[in-house]
Picture 1 (cartoon, protein in one colour):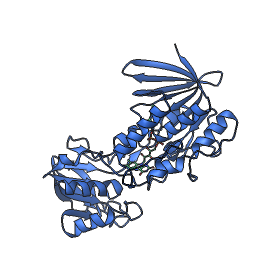
Picture 2 (cartoon, helix red, strand yellow):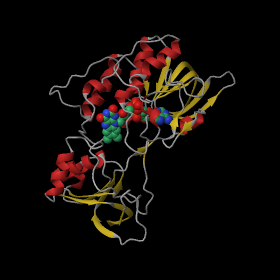
Picture 3 (cartoon, helix red, strand yellow):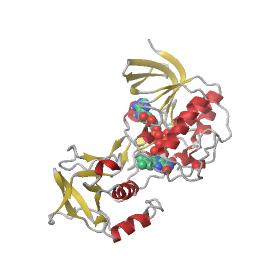
Picture 4 (cartoon, helix red, strand yellow):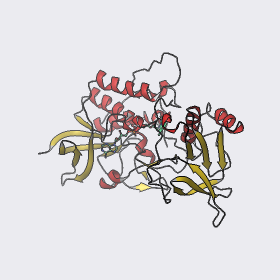
Length: 350
Ligand SMILES: Cc1cc2nc3c(=O)[nH]c(=O)nc-3n(C[C@H](O)[C@H](O)[C@H](O)COP(=O)(O)OP(=O)(O)OC[C@H]3O[C@@H](n4cnc5c(N)ncnc54)[C@H](O)[C@@H]3O)c2cc1C
């Protein structure tokens, strides 16, 4: 037996939550479903990670964030803020329930099928908003040994690497942050990066001088213009790259000791739901096709909100929370047929 709602919001990250508040305020009957806990994407950031966005840009639904020291927020503070919002607005989020199937019914509405620990559920909805984010899975290197137990694409607690040889692959924000924190926690850190140097436009401005001084003082070993080609138990084979960062074939390999390997090579979107709903993906980023004035995709009745609009950008991620607040009034306006004043500042995402 299916439950009926006017709108289904799929995803309860920051933007899904901001949309839920707006729909509730507008008196719209909706259901919100998340495959994990609220803020799942943020929950897997490293402990105590500091956002690069300032608190005012991360605030949602017009509810300010006050931080005792006026600094940027940590992962923990933002998750606590998300929980407070859900409590304050009495939002009902169906967590740990994943939307696994979607069908358009003959009358143009949708049937959604979800799975959870409790079993399967079905929903009939008139409108769907995909607020599913863009960080579903790591970008794989597809090299031998990537699946070994001492290899991970996620940085957790630096304590794990105390007095161990840690090889970090990548040279963007996550890699640099991981290297700085693990070195301070007593790990022997080596960074392999396929480019000649870090990009100051990508790495958090307060981390760049830190990593440079660690490298200068030989507290971190930096192997620029190298790429991992095979991971073994206890070591990694690196090959040289050319100026563009591409592997130079048939070059001599370098073997680097590594008790642990962290592949900080970015994340990619899972476009399965877009495909199920008939949303067209375009460009090398595989971005969903949508009308930027309403956020409705090419599939009538299917909207997209939040960082899900980005697809999988091959370079720098530029679609973040602060650029997505504007999606909320567009969607509410389209659903109610009324233009709604903006709820929070934000600039266009495209
Ligand atoms: C290390 C790191 C640091 C970052 N720092 C910043 C920063 O400083 N500022 C910033 O703005 N952004 C930052 N980001 C990006 C940030 O995570 C996103 O901006 C933010 O989470 C986007 O919110 P969202 O609501 O669009 O999507 P998400 O937070 O990704 O939420 C999507 C939700 O959809 C759910 N979902 C997906 N598929 C399904 C399904 N099939 N069924 C049900 N639920 C589903 C997921 O479980 C998830 O909870 C950072 C990312 C990383 C990895």
